[in-house]
Length: 121
Length: 413
Image 1 (cartoon, each protein chain N blue to C red):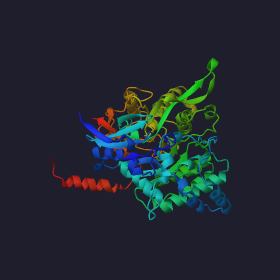
Image 2: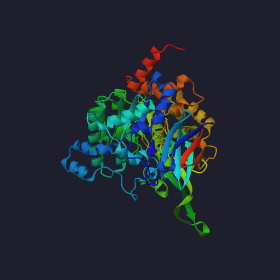
Image 3: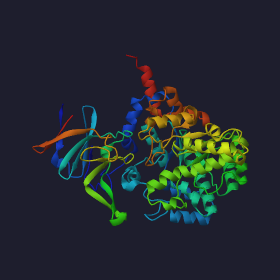
Image 4: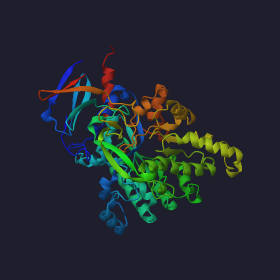
């Protein structure tokens, strides 16, 4: 397993993504709310660049007493990676598709030390 | 590359947009699968005529309507408008909001450049292009406006796009609310370069069996030009108006309206009246075909007196019609998909389509990677069937020709 230096964490502002190539793979490194994640930039649906799209929280239907629809909101604790080709959504925390856990983005271990971001491939 | 910080809920933080960068993985697929070895024809793709609408408006002959069109423009309405307005998935599919930022050279029409870029990325050689919001003028209550806009668009497309790029073709829009204008459209544009047929938007509330259309069908049959029914949705339909989510209206609407026309076409014996007229059913996916075959066959066996012109079962006629592939239902039931291909005789009747740049587009790999198709069937569906149906003179993507020459000059290892 090879370790790759991606960049200094100061170069990857919260909310942004860096795509780098390592071991012949495109990998998206995502900095979100103080945590850094790394996934292969490849959607298992049709091969889209999954990490180059938006991050959007889970949409929630709010159901009130007696089964009444009240409205919708976002679950900010469940952020999604959204593939920009078709909108397939994956949990940022695990890389699993939100409707089918068997469909997942390939995840890589990330380490931050001495101000640098390192990904193990 | 780094995507700079931005509001990730609104847009991916890139300052620019480029189709080839957006589709770089598609180009990788094209190279790894050796698409340079064969023709790929995309039978249902789109462009945003809205960006050229000021040009198209100049082609409207009625000066009052021309002024109105130039003032009002063509863009979709807001969040409460009847045409859905959140088909773009609130920015999730990034090419919708970012498309306008794409830079193109001034010397070639922007639509041609944009079409070439996505086609080259996917490995598509030739495409049949359709407009986007103009498909919805079918439901415009002002019939004369639909007719005028259709004629302006068809003239503009022939003059500025089809005449300039042999890789681009179109089945031109028929203003189906005006049967006489449909016939004139076929007579006026049927011989124009790049015109490979004509198309009815399925949300027209006119029975396709109406006697008023027979001259148009005869004119198409005489010219060997196929008639396409391009699926669409409208939230204005009484049944779809019961739905509150776009996913519902889209999932059912794009199938329902084509099922209505298909059923009318069959029960009124149109394949017997116009046996050489080929029909193409566009953008309803595939799963509806076996359903309708079984449903109509079952009823026909009990009450054939309701469809006395038919000499065979409805499904026999359906197997002789043509279908585009997108959006192919391929979630997780490969067995059902394989049976669907078999029931519709996909090897000869199915035509690959991407529907690019719309949100549910399919790449050529959705066909090429199917394990139950052999190489010949893949190539037929991806291009050969379209080449035959439309009598196309192949025009290959320049990069594929270059790649093919490079492969030929490279000795095998």
